[in-house]
Length: 95
Length: 107
Length: 217
Image (cartoon, rainbow over all chains, first blue to last red; front, side, top):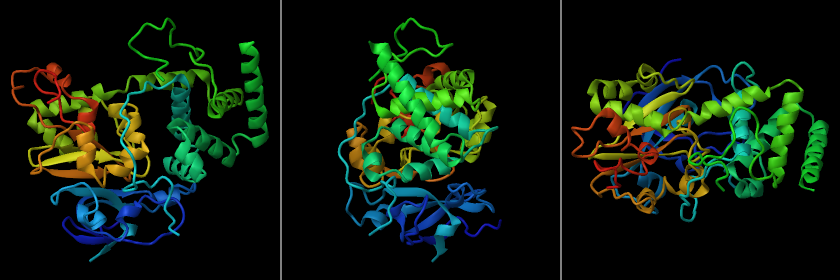
């Protein structure tokens, strides 16, 4: 599987609302972030959840987000605080 | 209407965190042990994500009000039936048997 | 709730199924008994295996994680290996984390990591044991990502404004282990003494390690 993104790439998380088992949290849908790590490739959990093999494997990245991107000031954090989540390539697009 | 999963909690309003410690009961330990054995090799009856999907399919009220291992045992039941390892009829019969036996033991 | 505390002599051994000290009351407790008896009757599982699995899990507790952290505090090369390939580094100490990627996160004077799983309750169980109830709670899972400073204050953990708090949502196949900052004035302590300063919560990131006297700083 080719690595789609490099460290430092800016990405946007998909904002789709498909039914079923999904590992992309709602609070990050549509948010812009930065790739900080590539973990390798893993079986797709959205398919594993229904008894399928989840193959071919898909790339998994750690993506870094500013707090404001998710909460727009509506939380208890400092400007320098951040969130990361591990997101599969199928949910990420380059920006 | 959003299709937010009942388990997808990040950012929702919630109260203070109860930090009291809890030593798992024997029931909880057995549920944990059985779940791991059923999921692991050589059985591999299901993947962790099937377990999660089954928990996410619980009624929202059940999800919100149930204890952690209660959700696990409900998911285990769902998956054992789905995979044909147990049938609803034998499970119902066994639950009744266990209940009457435990009742008798108390008398 | 604690019906099976380890710190008192409860007068029974762990080699056979003992009756719970509390009788089953809830529907789900009866369901557990029924499922277990059926699986054993149908030779899907054996009572022995279930008991062995319970005992195996009892051996998994935060002291395992603490041993790894203590080693990383005294051995920079090990710490670097732990940060670059967690699974491989912990294998040197005899720990295996199967099929999941173990990722260590180093807390420093610039950055404080705090781990949560907003979608379920992913946790490095092999190294820290069964997660505490609060880690699995609606309250922690909801609030950690949105109000980390409030959550840390609730835990009595003061992180200066000048330090970046990085909330790490464990949403996939990685399991995160926080390396807390090594407390000041511990240069002369042995690895074994250091282990005692490394609490479960400090490896989740909701607390810092204890100070050199074993007290919360």
